Length: 262
Length: 151
Image (cartoon, rainbow over all chains, first blue to last red; front, top):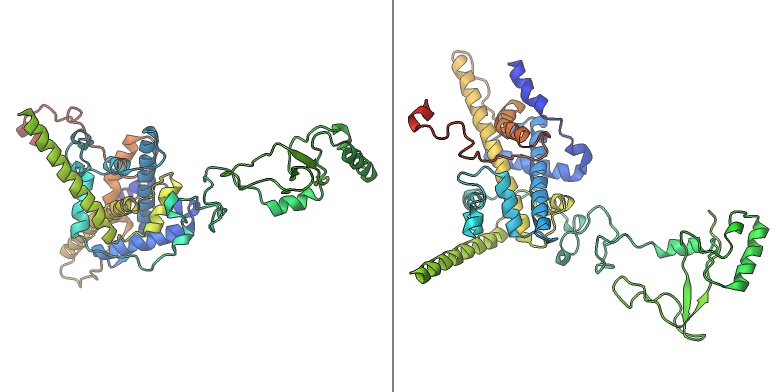
C-alpha cells in the first residue's frame, strides 16, 4: 500500500511553480482551483493535493500558450489566432476520434476539444471567481495585446507606441545627472578639449589622458545640438518619428557634458 | 453534380463557421472560474500574444474543464474508497462521509496523464496531459478479430 502511494509521488517532482512563479498569481490560481473542486462536490482538500492540482493547472495553461505560440510562429505570425489555440487544445486533450482530423474538414468546430468545450460551457454551472481582480496589475493597453508584465516601464500611457521588444529607454534625468560629472569628447572641439584636458590634469585623472580626442567606447552622456545658426531648438528632436532620433543637417556642436567619474 | 456538392460543402462550412462564431460570442457572456487576468498573465509569460479576449476565455474554459475532469475523476476514486471502507466496517460506526481531495485520489486520477507524459517526451512534467491517441496501426490489438481483442 505504501509502495503504491509512493510511486506516483516519486514520478512527480515537487511542485516548483510556487517558488518560481509569482506567489500572487499562484495563490489566485489555487483559489480558482479550489472553487472548481468545491463545485464538483468536494467538501475539503488537502493542502498538498490542492497545490499539486494548481500546479497542473498552471502547467496546462502554459503548455497551451507555448504550443499556440509555436504554432503561430511557425506560420509566420507573432500573434496567435483561433487556429493555433484550437490546435494547442486539441493536442493537449484526449479526444475520441482522429486527432487533427478537423484540419482536413476546414472547420474548427469539428475539433473534438472544441466540441467538448461547447458542451461544457453550455451545461456546466457558471462559477465566477471569488473576487474581481484589478486589471492593470497584469496588462495595460488592450489594443496592443499583452504587454510585458514584469517590467513596469510602459505603464502609464507614455510610450505606448514603442514596441515592447525594444530595450528600455534610459532615464534622461539620471543621464543628465551623470553628464554633469562626465567629460564627453565629441568630434574636434579644440578649445573645449584643451580646457577639458587641463581640468583633467588638475584633477589628476590619469585614465583619460591616453584617450585624447578619441570617442569614448561607451557613450553615456547626452549631447545637445543647436539647430541653425545661433538660435533654434536646443536638444535632440525626439518627436519627429516613432522611437527615432532625428538628426538635423546644420547643427553646431555644443558640448554640455562633463567628465564622468567612473 | 459537382457544383451541388461544392455548394453543400460550402454551406456546411458556413454553418460551422456561424456556429463557431456563436460559440465564441457566447463565451463573452460566460464567466469562467479562472479569471481572464490570470489567464492573460500566464499566457503572456509563455509568449502567447493575442488581443482577442474571446481566445483568452476559450483557454480559461479549457483549463477549467481539464481541472474539473481531473477533480471529477478524483471524486469518483474518493467515493469508491469510502464505500469500500463502509462495507468493511459495516458494524462499526460510520466515519464521516466528507469528500476530501486527497493526494491518493488525485494521483490516481493523474496517473494516466503522467505515464503518457513520460512516454511523450523523456522530461517529466514538461507539458501536462499529453494524451496522444494511439494510432490504429500502432495498437497491439490492431488487425485482430474483435472477439480475440476482447479476450
